[in-house]
Amino acid sequence: KLPMGQRPAVIKLVSADLPRTATRKIQRKACKKILERIVEATPQKARGGNVAEPVAEAVAHVANIAVSKIKPDTNLREDLNFDSLMAVELASALSGIGNANPDPDELARCETVADLVELIGARIDQAQIEVAEADAEAEKVVIPLPVAAPLKSALGSLQEGIYGRGLRAKVYGRSNIPANRPTIVVSNHCSHLDMGLVKYSLGSYGKKLVGLAAK
Image (cartoon, rainbow, N blue to C red; front, top):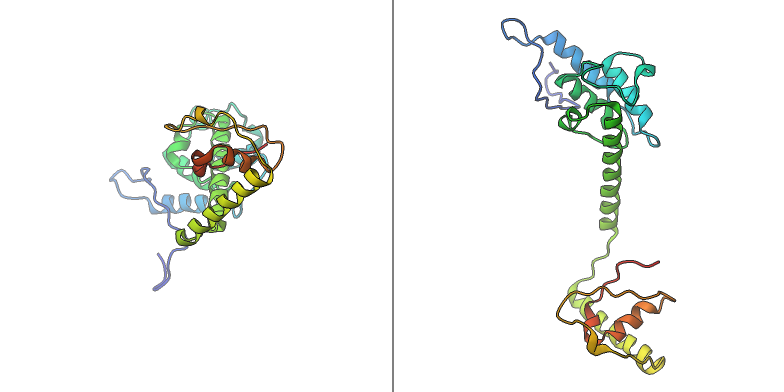
């Protein structure tokens, strides 16, 4: 129970069956102990590096055994008697490791500690990708179309002048461009002039050219 006007700091939705008496009443003291264990197991900050050690520590804490007894081939259900409530507790314990935030249903499909390590590693990689994409999206400068269109046209004219009249580039085989389908154009990338030269060489087909990668 919370004092009047006070809000809970953390809310967790649990789909697993809670401890009950023989008459199907909720055992409040048992539920309180489970909640205290979940709060205690939840990391205060993410830990980077090798995830095997923090995963083993989380499993040992939930199973209430020494971390030295946790091995990669330790079976969660057969060796540690993990049930659905322990899976919820373990999800909280693993949530702060690199912002993995695993779902209890995902954990329930893991048979061994090695499976857990693989899952948490994959979730951390995905979280890092999402953060990087969000940062890139936030930093992206969007130029309004009324401004971008004239700039793009001016740049195209400038490139035509540089490659056509300035460098006097000669293009052979433009008739072979499959203009009725998407095409991947690969150059040997001798210099930073390649992108503009390829675009110039493709003529009107090169107006929609997009750079994918360079090495």
